Length: 218
Image 1 (tube, one colour):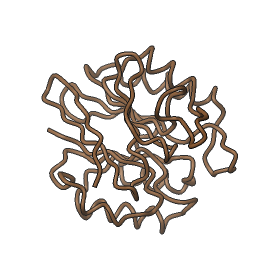
Image 2 (cartoon, one colour):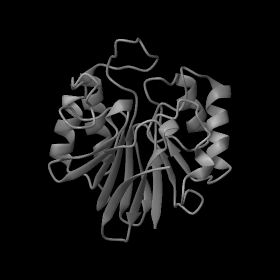
Image 3 (cartoon, rainbow, N blue to C red):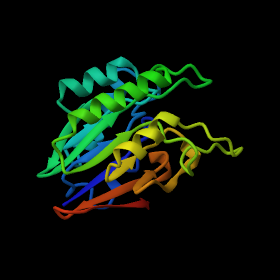
């Protein structure tokens, strides 16, 4: 069984039909920033583009998404923000979207303390699963995945501490577009596929015992 994950769509739906294995995937995981401060029409356009290829969508808002986006996803039973959902027997997915404050005053930002609390609360919901994939829009601090073009690290210390403590099987993140790549925090692989417009996505395979992930590009 495999799953496809991507994020930072920002309403760029052109690459979606070209993602190999998308139609056959057991689910499509969208880690955040579906729109550019968009409302119903914007999220609907993206959702329909994905659903036309694979209707099994699990998604959450990022900092560039408005509350309308989360409401839209919840109405379609696709929302994973602050939720833990079963992907397969023994395999769970938990989601924590939005981000900590940015210099740009984006629609969905929360304090670091709130993000940390959300991570811990949502992780408790995921306790029944033997293996856990985390979709966390904000990347962990001091990794290859939170570095701006000038070399500055801007990720969340709380996300990093959560990964070190919780040791999930995999974390898929995003938010920092120029930090596409893979890294590890402790034993946990962490992947940032970058902006979808750049062709980045993650293929996640699960054989019933082991979760593996590969960063791919179109």
